[in-house]
Image: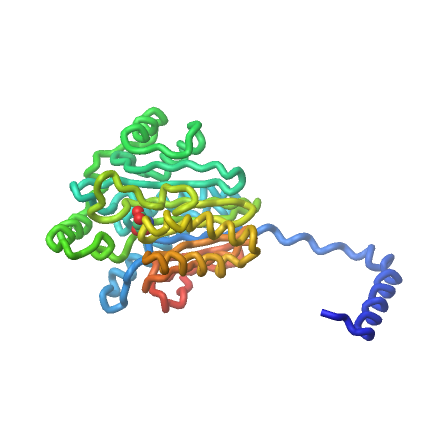
Length: 346
Ligand code: ASP
């Protein structure tokens, strides 16, 4: 834009004034820098959710479950803890809560087992850890974190991952711990009606994830899931695939995804969103919306949560709902479920 002469003139005048008044200004104390804030966004899965199919009691249960996980992560951040500890705490609460398809309450495989996937990533160092197909680890997010911090590897699968977990003292449980009657029913429904696709049985996917920015400005992301009902042949989704379902980079953003994992892997969703922020300077919302639109074009459903280094926490999904919540040091604390749900303040 061209600067017109009067404006430029005014600019020079202002500069002269500033120089003239400098000694006086030097005496005035500088306002202290605003303390860097923290920010947290979580999800409990995206899918087909309609108000008429959800009873008020059920809705209240989900809202309370999300609020509990949000508070677990917020507490860590409020007290000056790291974004890594915050995402671990939030995801752990949802893994223990049977409402979600992660840890306890995970969906069943075709053979009637619960096989769990999880990942975590540190945006400060881009260190990452993930596990796939574990069947005895109470909190897969803790095992993923141990892989990141205590092994030379990024991704471990199956029996080997669990052997590593046992060696590291990560809590193991009887597989019955993960099983719930509702998830069993969903498997039976799928088997009884072969016309249903994997994604139709429970269109509320239920995977969980968290992204956080701590007071020091570092980002982290974590995701945990049981995958999809009726999965077979050692199927692994996007959640434990670094760059697909989970990614964090202090230079760009932190992302956790949920939805039809095959499409999220093919679109490289989490890394692609970060790349758009880093190289194209897009906002978190614009980048997330574009990549979710790409997933939709491929035929996939789902959503993401994204947090930028400036603490912009966003949701983007192409389903009718996503269990989601966010909080930050400026006093925001919101929980939402349906697409048209103006996030309700707690
Ligand atoms: N993304 C997960 C998977 O494909 C499923 C989900 O988000 O619910 O394994």
